[in-house]
Image (cartoon, rainbow, N blue to C red; front, side, top):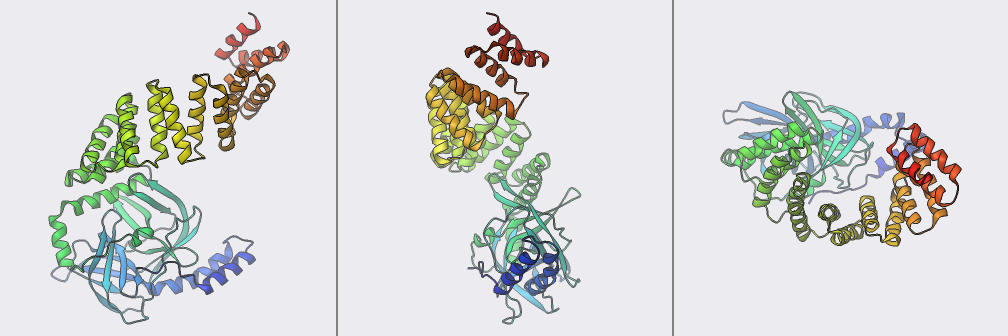
Length: 484
């Protein structure tokens, strides 16, 4: 539907030369390249002006062409409008015919507009997730200005549970530039800039460009019709609060996020996604009883949504309701059997109920789905160890060492070797543990008891003195072994 990644040979050649001359990094050379990049992108960026039924200006924003007759902008830019027009960088104005698609939660709207061929080239869209630290440019075109350009980097790509990705950018977004393209150094769109004003804050972030490709184009709607339906539709108003809540989640401000999601559920009590995010935010704030109530409401509205049961499981676990947690995680797995995190959480819950065989099976399924799942290998090894299945525990901890070679892992390995009678291997492992963390008192105790096993009481006494100097409870335990 939209042009995806048509590589611009000229841009690639220019950047390649810049990387050679600049030592492989976008330094001064990249700054020198920006004017050319901006010059090429600006004709595709538009100013958007909206009007009420009397012809009075309502709002101003920005957008950009994704096809020769289609413009993307933020949904909030066109809200409550009866007529909309775009302004090109050359000063020409064109009426917008209507709206083809809306993504309320992503705050996107796809507009239909007719302009002379070649006057407004579409921008290429890339659907890959940008890298943190990647250089970007935001090119807006607020009404009444000759253009608005800011550059910066991708500071983070956040995964918002139950929603998807949000891109944090350092480039400031000027008022009127909501809906601007966020482009990489190849001139490809990686996101749509969004300026959210909430409680006196200006929150700048970008909606990933992959959501453009996910838009479902329908029949062309006039702004009057869309506005009328929006006023009747509680969901549209609720989505505005939801979008502002997402902006707060991108900053880890769970209290403010919860307040917006609460408003969304009050506006539309049947909004499952808003209930889900309310529960998630409450959970992050430690308000687990409220989180559980909200998440259960989300599950009632969308019983096929696995993520809601993960939230229910997390809240139940936090409240010590382990049987309920097991039931919730099992339901999440029935709905999504590729969810390694749900298998891991199920294992933790089963462990609390001392159902170790089932716990082990859950961890094994987690690592089968995600072979580098360090936490699952750790818990798997610990469960085997509790059952005195030391060879299997050792195997799990050897896998753990591949992904997490730290003091705790080497202590686990040492304890398995000790129980298996491989005392020299245990000694090496415990020495590695205290080398990684000299203050790891349990590993130092284990090192001391291994020296005793080997008949080296002097070295064991050294470990005892170090523990005693640290006033550790492990000192007394080692003393008992030294003086039976």
